[in-house]
Length: 130
Image (tube, rainbow, N blue to C red; front, top):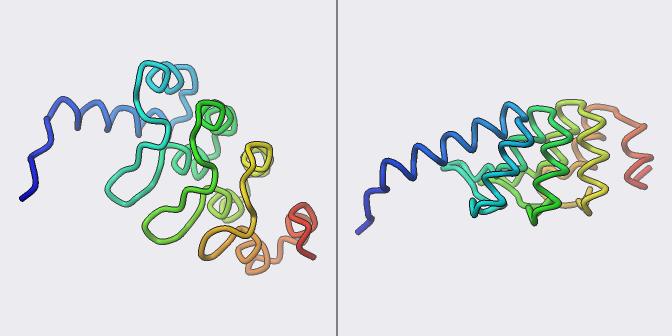
């Protein structure tokens, strides 16, 4: 038996996920500082960090990682924020995730696998995976 979520909680979560997608770093950081979990995930398993990374917002990625968001947290499909950033070609996000300790070999496909798939030799070199 599952409980119906409180509509106010759902509204707040939706707002915070939208902040991550839009890269509104200051507002996003303020919500996390006020108690929203840094590793909050949506119904597909996408974390705030995943959404910020996939949408190309390096400052939001840095802010979330600095507040404890796991840079290797995979979504329900096994994808990590780093693999998503490689797929999208977001170099600043890739660098922010690596600075936060992201593992290029984590996930399915991993960031290394994704770089190989798209012939991104510069990223393979960055990952030490030539």
